Amino acid sequence: MAVAEISPCSYSRYQTLPANLSSTPLNAFHIPSFKRCRSPLQVRRPLSISCSVAPSQVQSPATAVPVLPADAANKQECYGVFCTTYDLQAEEKTKTWKSLISVVVSGAAGMISNHLLFKLASGEVFGSDQPIALRLLGSERSYQALEGVAMELEDSLYPLLREVSIGVNPYDLFQGAEWALLIGAKPRGPGMERAGLLDINGQIFAEQGKALNAVASRTVKVIVVGNPCNTNALICLKNAPNIPAKNFHALTRLDENRAKCQLALKAGVFYDKVSNVTIWGNHSTTQVPDFLNAKINGIPVKKVITDTKWLEQEFTESVQKRGGVLIQKWGRSSAASTSVSIVDAIRSLITPTPEGDWFSSGVYTNGNPYGIAEDIVFSMPCRSKGDGDYELVKDVVIDDFLRERIKKTEAELLAEKRCVAHLTGEGNAFCDLPEDTMLPGEM
Ligand code: LMR
Image (cartoon, rainbow, N blue to C red; front, side):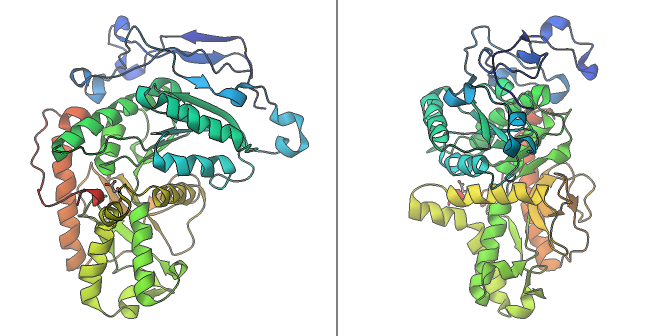
């Protein structure tokens, strides 16, 4: 039964120390307040701790401790109609529903989220019997916009949407979260070096990793969308040592979808005929859309599209640079198609992958069968049983053309990793990024 109402919950700023940190002095642990509900009733209003980690406070994961400012503002609130009581067990229609899941969306006032939140609330992502709690994470600056989004969610009267809260503090919003869709990131500003972008966004994702580590469900699934998403995902997982690294993904599904569309267009078929498309590597202009293993109507692409020059050059480049071309046309980054691809990425993890097919996701390299460097987040072909987990696909062919390009995107990710070593607990950062590579939108 899910009920939301004022209840006898207790709040504590201090939490039991994780075993691996137990030698740290107790007063070093300023853990955010936790709701402790002794009954099914819940309070969702008075959390009152906010947290920001200044660059100088960033610590290695081994000693990572959330640092909370004393003057933290109350910024996590249930919103409007979502503060009312409900009882799913009381009605025939809802008592067979699954138990409520909590989904956090960061950058919740942004364009991608504006498409995504309504898909999540409608049931089209998690199913028509899956009630949902949406936690909208934004910044102080976007707080009013968060309220605007929450108002629109209210006015949409989605039956499955049972709770909405808005806030600026990841330690509050991530409490018990089962999904974290991390979209919020700073765009690269004029004159900003790529290293600067990595550092600024890396700090956001280091903090969010620490918050996930402190308060999220141990089985939380994290999809990092904010760019540079592979390296942000790496930073995030390194700062969340108590959550399996396998639970973190960088979104490359948009690139896969783009590749499928281009192959369909060239072959003169509808895009549902294209399968087995892998995006290898980084979500950047070094990414490798794999036409060697891809199929059209179950037939290898190279047998259907015999124009090898097109596959190697135009096709590859059109996928790598699609995001940038779109920005030139739109004047802003892709939003609707990104949100669709986030939905696709979630669905790929919660439904069994069709026999013989796979999907692409940026995942942590830890014993991969392709000879790709370990300890980075690299997009690879995955299959899922539909339980939220995945396994890597083994029977793919990698020829010299693919290998050479995979090496290039791997080198870029290794360089990005060196550049954020101060955020992953691996010592001093050293930035030697290849100059000719960019985010899809940076062209
Ligand atoms: C995209 O691929 O559309 C975006 O990642 C582009 C960008 O840099 O925002």
